[in-house]
Image (tube, rainbow, N blue to C red; front, side, top):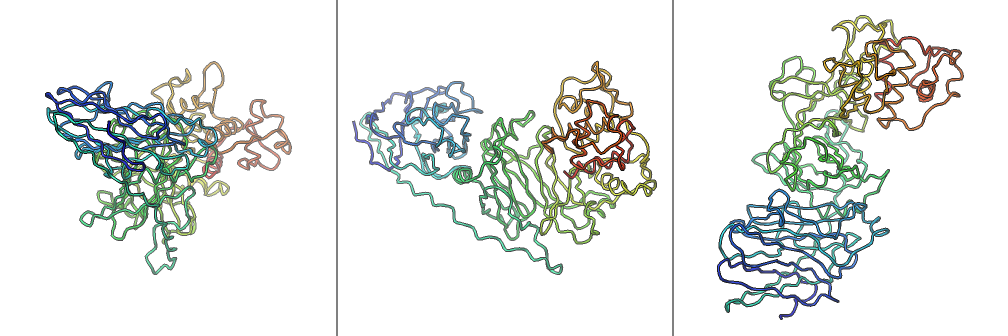
Length: 629
């Protein structure tokens, strides 16, 4: 038996697969008291179509909290497959280490089939919790994978220090402080076969340098004669990981990969607030860039639960996605089967739009946001889990009332527009428009002032009606009339409530008096499923009945709680000033009191009028207030 290589050295482990008559066996140094990483092969002779199982295991590794193992192979001779099923879509079988869901294990898999390089890893993100509560295993199996024989030929499968997409340099183990573990051996003894000496070479891994601290970007000038910077000067909340993209001068594309080592270190430093960590991938501005492409591990957004958020910031726009973004139904198989995904953020033009739309957009930003897997553009719609988008913008032409700055989603095929009803201007030092969306694609910032001929006498609701109509939240009875004094139906109120709060869910049942053909079917079904309404009894909703003020307040309070906009509730003391408080139904007292306590409803003097029908003007006043909560 040959001696193990010296400590702190990672060796190239050569495995000879002679598929005719050559064979050899592997022997290892006793691991009883040694700290080592071992790659085991169940056989080294196989026919075409057979699978060689590879097991990665460790012995006596203290404080183990993660690993990445890089392996090179000849893609013309073998392909990476699942060792049990032979599938190429899920090639890893997880062992008994780094699997405790309490500490948020982040899987890493990047397989470059063209060059024959694969990175396999698994790293705990919640390291402080792991240190405090984890039962750390020091010995066990990291993973199993397989190599399917494609051709009868001698080949090599070896540990490598080559860089892989989405990975770091070389094979490395991490401790519970996120640091490299150094005091271990990688053991590989190779036996002579038919008098052919297979040399064992050694690779001394270079230490991974700490990320160079980035100098803060200069505050953009607010001088109107200079070109304003598009990047907000306020730092986003969360642990910031700076990324320096490289520019392709021929295309104007600036691309960068978020390395898993840097991601892990950032998560280790990130604060947990209300059970959630936030990581900001801050993409540095590159002079001459027309687009930014950011590649991240797919698994970073594939959790079943919301445990962290990823915010990508660029000079053209920012996108924020939750950890369970890819867990929803309908996600493309191309994304699920890809080790990494890329997000593209770029400026766009007004080609194909009609003149009226162009005039309302003017020189304001138009940004296109896309998602790609393996270089292919993925058509995306995520009805269950939206993303948050922010487009930096400094208003230069609008009047002081910025509420009429809106967001439109542009159909790239037809040139048509769809209002993004959640779009709001936020007063950062240089300004930004924020919105929630269930789609990727092209978005434009526009100025859209909308008014009606019949609302001038409703001064207490006029601005509210105009703002909501301009954003597409509510509609008039015609282009010129709103009918502010007309009573509103229960179904119509539910539609506006759901839309204004951006609520969505799937549902399987609805009220018996709500027809699938009705325009309000989907919205009422969601309201029932979410618990906003339980109907009026006997599984009935009475959608076309006029809604009373007290019912409007009850439904609004329920929806605000479900949307996470409010947490506390009112009580009878909050409505004691109203002389008609005794007319409030018992089921409605809490809902009415909650809106009064929050200042959403103020009544008329000492009158709350709970049994009166809610008008379209009152509806606009209510929706406007909850829109800005």
